[in-house]
Amino acid sequence: MRVDERASIVARGFGSGRSSRDAYDGEFEALARGDEAVDAKMNSAPGARVESDDLNSDLRDRTLQAIEKANYRATVGDVSAISGASVFDTQKALNALAADTGATLEVSNVGDLTYVFPKSTKAILSSKSFKMKMEPVMSGVKSLASYLFRVAFGTSLVASIMIVYTAIFALLSAQRSGDRDDRGRSYGGPRFYFYPSDLLWYWDPYYYRRPRRRDREMNFFESVFSFVFGDGDPNLDFEKRRWELVGRAIRKNKGVMTAEQLAPYLDTAGYEDESFVLPALTRFEGTPEVNSVSGSIIYRFPNMESTAGRVSAVGRGDSDALVQEERWVFSLAEPSQRFLAGLLGVANIVGVIILANMINDPKLMYHSREYVELARSFAGLLPGLFTYGVLFFVVPVLRVIRNMGKNQAIDARNNARLLAARRIANPEPRLAAKLAAASSASSQRVVGDAVYTSKEGGGDDFELSDFDRRLRERN
Image (cartoon, rainbow, N blue to C red; front, side, top):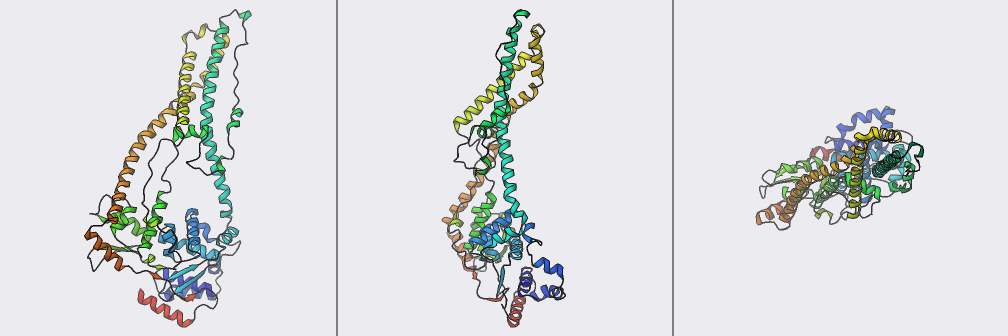
């Protein structure tokens, strides 16, 4: 049996909280019999199953970024603290990535597991995973579809205005010509032709390749879409940023925190009930315990108490950042662009009303035959034009009402976090004593020399037996 297979089984046994000997005895027997299914599962070769393809793309990318920041050597706690992903998801992602890239696993004499990845981890994954190769293509397709939808809506406003006023002038021309003698009737009145392809001149086919930045001025069609539908959720990545900061704060405090220290990152209205810390406990597998010195409750995160020792400088100062949500705004377009979009919307709905009155004119039967035929042809467009014109203003009004309610809730949460941060910055004597007791209860371990490694020749039978003994005592 190869050493890397044995190390992988030892790691899984430790992760499950059981004795490594009990955890991997059955798998040793399967591998000894040459079980190809187990061998294929644990050693993903090019063209074989790629374990990381089963991971959520966001989780995989965040884990890879955390591994890179940790200089390709890290514990589960290191990666979870950097990425903000839950310990459970991080463990799953690391196991899959380690299987696909042939990462080395190291086990210390106290049972701490360290993953050591090759520098070419991303290149190895890309060469194996068809999914990773196709993701940039699919992302480009989605961006293009989003761009076309935004531009199409702005184009629809221009098209609607042109259709409406073309119809109005055509009917006026037919009405004037109907007042003349049939023999002297002139068909030389104003003609207005509109081809949808003309609007392609305004399109920017490379829009989807540019990142969307708030400091970049929108083009006209984007501003129309922004006026009606807004610019999306400003806090789309808020949860990701929040948990990244929580993870770094836990690591900074060496795996032990109080509810007051977690409050600036979470949603709380007070400290009478500390249930607001449950999301953090669940994500980072923390447990409450009563401090023997202060008699207060502290929260210990065992997975954050060990580190490979190479991430202390990562995100320095970020753990002190304040978690704040951004308020919803009506539109990120320039004021002049919003004014122009609104003005064109008014012109459109006014034109639709005028056109409807002209078509429904009771004197229609007395007009010329040309006028009657034109009116009937334009009548079929009225429901769609009127619906578009009304929704152009109804949707923004509803958004304004919705934004007011959302912003009130955001302001309340932001103010609560700000007060919590100020309380930690200037603690009263009782809180200061509680923080000091929590700090004295913390003890971060820097993973030392490995007693076992998945590299060839790493670890002997005596060291493995000693590791098993220590693990049983710990459990």
